[in-house]
Length: 497
Image 1 (cartoon, rainbow, N blue to C red):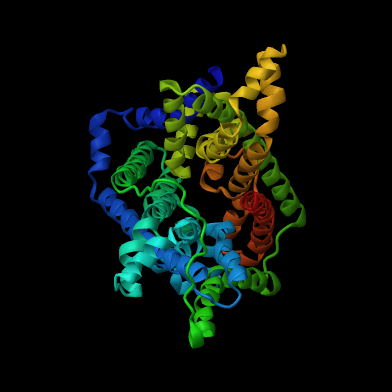
Image 2 (image 1 turned 120 degrees about the horizontal axis):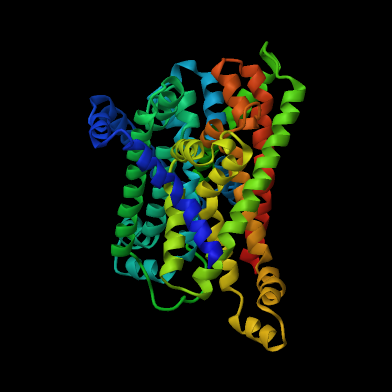
């Protein structure tokens, strides 16, 4: 109970204090900043970028998912894996690579290109899973009634995958609204980039706080709209149905030409970033200091490990409360964690700066504040995995342990913690991976002289030292690929079970 309360306070305190800071000079100053034409322009730019990228990702994600699950395209299993890999690529690494290849892409067009090529897996992966769970009998019935294949897909298949597609689209929209690395590298001024510029360039931090509140309200509104839509248009069926193979469309002579579509997509998503890293590393004149690269890699692993540890410690009591003692407190704690995850990293970073200066000034720009910010941002990532693991433990095992004389702590340690360990490990790995790639909160809160791979890469690209940035980009991708491989192996093993 106490642990869940602490986790709730940690999750909501940044946004509460950000509101207090934004209205510190009175509601008049708050409204003056909010109603500026520049604020409206930035808001429309952010929403337009999110709308364009989300639409493109929906088209690409649904199309790719259908191609690899419902056709006999050559090398289907390999294509399934390769198409999902761009998810591990940080947006600022992809933007840096594209900008080195085509400097004229800076701005809106480059931001759309980069964010689309790395975000479509958010739609592709859940839609592919939904297509595998579809009931083929419904499509068989539709075809026996004379419907054409396209009509069957539109009226029968699409409603069954709609929830997964909308959920993936929500993740894309939130990612684009909160992204800082790609738009900053592309020099495309939207809310996140402007908040960072305003904070760094002005002694008056009120405009940055007001824009932070506005961005938080926009992201939370998007989450509420998606939740309302999901409740209204949810699709369910009675029973799991019989396991049957999904229908496969024989492409005939179009099999190999169809393969060109995912090959081109993977080439844009992974090929260009990899080519950019190799090109700048081999041809550029600027060079990174080896000791600085080693220090940055060590710091990245350190904050990743500490962030994962704190997130698991905070998420575990919330998950136990939600599964074993459902009530108002458990709902509030879970909602607070998911709401905090909807906040952009730049907003949480800004709020933690204000909070540290006012409440614990001795910890300003110290490592503990940075780790707490990671916990605020990524607690929900661990919550879902730990909740699923705890829910699979029969409550009767705990009763048996108590009847044999074990204390509450003994039952928790010997039964709950031991059986939920795989889920906890998966949650910690996911958070570790995400923390290593995080940029905006780290830029705001890192201790003086403390650099991670992401901040070093940001500093190098900001000074147009692309060759010096290459080692940091390569190390980020390599270190991010290892946890991704672990998560894939765990997921594959669970699917076989």
